[in-house]
Image (cartoon, rainbow, N blue to C red; front, side, top):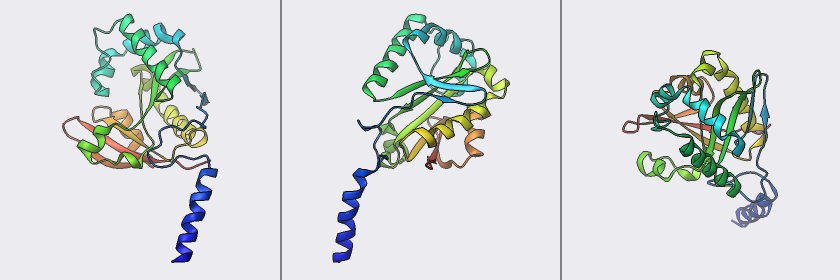
Length: 216
């Protein structure tokens, strides 16, 4: 009994010394937000206010394709530059407050915006509707890529870069990947990875994958 208590006491002393995430921590003040990831063909970097117009024109080139596959009711064919600017400002405010992070995916060949990555806290509805424990995950990670990027086979490069970045630069231990059942490319990437399928939400037509992050 005393030995067990002593071990528990030591654990309480030791845990704060390690700069790693504990269950349900999305962000801690002492953590440094990763700024950049670069692969052979792609770069992942933070969204900036100066990106707003290019960002809008990027996703609108694949508006119908993205709308059908993402299941986000976005981007709408009625989306406007003004709405986009409001959305970008909201993402920037989230990043400043460290409550969520939005990154762009850049094609190194022509510097064009071909996608985006979103790092957000796990939604309460996941636990309420699907029984997914919020305390088991540090974040939800979602993304989109343009139809042209998929046609150019850049989704494979992107997913390798994303996984490497999570392992090398982010403090989290486990993330949740929510993916629409219509997003065949993302589903194929996750099903062929070490991510573990958790099931589906039939009403939302969404599947969920658990991904454990190993430190590099």
